[in-house]
Image 1 (cartoon, rainbow, N blue to C red):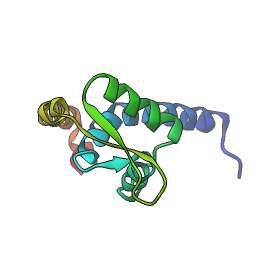
Image 2: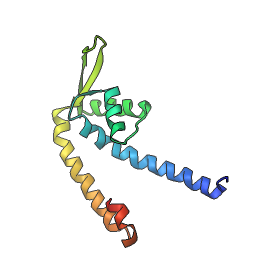
Image 3: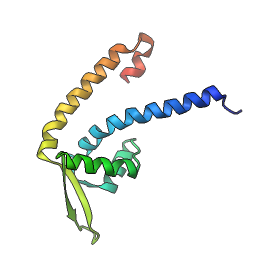
Length: 125
């Protein structure tokens, strides 16, 4: 059975809004993941293993922006004979990440309070 035009429209809108939620969450996820050094591919794989699929076209520009902003640092390494750029949190990244976690937690509390009693379990879960 084919979905109705309304359902197709709702699905497209849900996908767009989900993408917006993920985009905001991705910065914090990358900073947390880069407490341990990773090259780009291993970072993508690590996030995917945790259930967060990230396209290369999204991840690499974000990494470059975070590095430009001083939150990450990188160096070239050739551990398997192949040179790879390895990223890790900078001192500034280590300093700001706990503050971002605090902001994330506060936002989660507000969202939880806005949920109706019927939505509480999904909002808190």
